[in-house]
Amino acid sequence: SAVISQKPSRDICQRGTSLTIQCQVDSQVTMMFWYRQQPGQSLTLIATANQGSEATYESGFVIDKFPISRPNLTFSTLTVSNMSPEDSSIYLCSVEPTRTGTETQYFGPGTRLLVL
Amino acid sequence: GDSVTQMEGPVTLSEEAFLTINCTYTATGYPSLFWYVQYPGEGLQLLLKATKADDKGSNKGFEATYRKETTSFHLEKGSVQVSDSAVYFCALSDRGGSNYKLTFGKGTLLTVNP
View 1: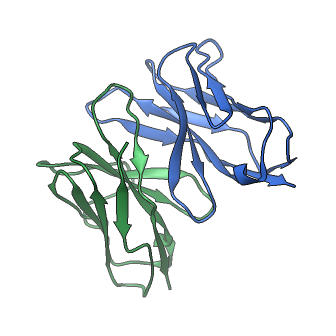
View 2: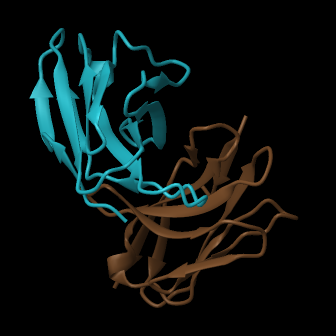
């Protein structure tokens, strides 16, 4: 497994502003993922962030709105840009520690975002 | 595309009752299957997993068997406790590309009363 931390744990932001969420892992991992969990809903994958390459975004998510950085094998950031109340969600990062073929992902504690 | 359908909640049980949360999936190929649990105010934790047909995943008294013939991965526990109150998510992993993508069901809220 892996120990994953996220900062901030929660925030309240004004519409039109941007927030950068950090994800730190205690070991080097190839694959990191960012998910969104809207209130009362399931998790939706935003993008996959592999070190040394551009993030791969899922349908409905674009880089201008959710820019991602992956500067090394233990760290990634997700920025939520030009926020609106509809962006109020829990944002989670996850990692797949090793390519064992079991595709098991481990999740951080999440960042709870409220946009007013 | 891949999809996961799980039992609508909420589910309310008394302590020591038997629990079943149904989960069925649609996928191309041979996905791995997972159950994750989200306790109040916390992130997701992996509860159990199965990587091939007829595998049984188990953890903390919970079990689920990968049934390829019925495309199901139902979660069961013989005797639930108040501490099991949480949201349970069934998920599958798509092995189709170079990236592994988890597809989640909508989640089932379980409340266990003393």
